[in-house]
Image 1: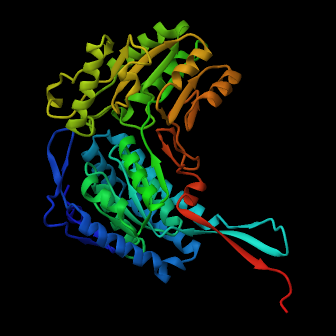
Image 2: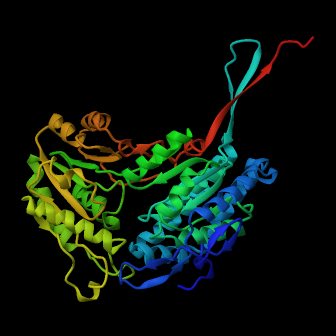
Image 3: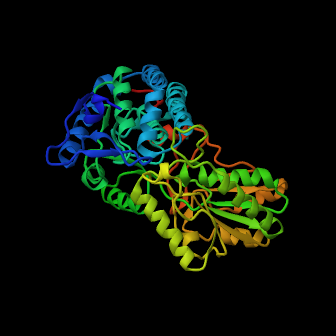
Length: 488
């Protein structure tokens, strides 16, 4: 795809050249290995330029004093622009991370809906008058932090960019967005759409580049007053360490190893379909992927047999092929990492019941493909059951009773999501409350709503995105008091 804006960075409302001493990024199509295009890369120098530009814009009267309905109107126009260019955005995402075409289209629509949702939140959410305890009137108002650095991953760039940028702008901040170096292009188009929608120059800046070259510079910058990051747990720890030194708030949405639970009384066919969708959709490259399937012994054999059949029947193909259900992984290096983890499990004695290797089809040989994989014959202590694989690999583990299930499901460093399949609503409630996870799905999986708070327990993160409080995440409360005693 030829697009002049993709060869530039976006600072101060316009496309600018990258840093001359930093090689441009190569946008690679993981389905074929072909180069899509080059993207300019930033480093510490342009990070400083962008942050200072954003700080000036955030302090300007035109932005700080903009009324909520005016800010909301800009967000709505951004949603309009995304919808007008939905085919372009979906294609860019598909070419860079290999998601199947249908899923890319759905994610662009979701991203536009996120901007529309936060337009509504921006316009309708008010401050509060707080109960007085004396002769005064007290209230809480909410102020933006100023400059927010938003760092997004490669697995779902459109939805992640919207999930951070929309509420941060609604809250009145300026944003410096660092997309993943693997999927930088949709963010650049988003910046162009924002400018066309009337967003003041400097309020949204986009800096493609590596975490080491530009991400670290943004997190360290003294004028960046809040960081929102979605990605790996170890990177999140480093960001948190820097934030602690700066006394800067962070929102961290990190890894997961989510338990997906099937009790004996579950509707088996519906549960199997959800188990497969929860791990194989998007090639398993989802933080909430249900990567550990805990199945009660009474239905274990039936569920495993149907899972294996489902995995083998999934159509793995080019992302835009008719009927494609799973495309490649996002990069060749990541595909090889996933393969090495499955190979290690095999050597350790695991049973690979489906997949466990690349597809044999000749037309897929040049891409970063890996077959839907079902692993059994392991315990919850196996490395493959404890480590986040971030690929289409499902570990199936039996359990005996509710107490056994809770102990195993919670025996992980992560706590992002979980799923429960049972016809017993009382059991569903007990298990949902006992699971150490930020989201619990009951008789469904991966149902996501921008209006419902989302985040993780334990090593899966800090803070909650989405919902009305998703805008408050990017604001700091201020108490204001009016003395009501008569002035002499």
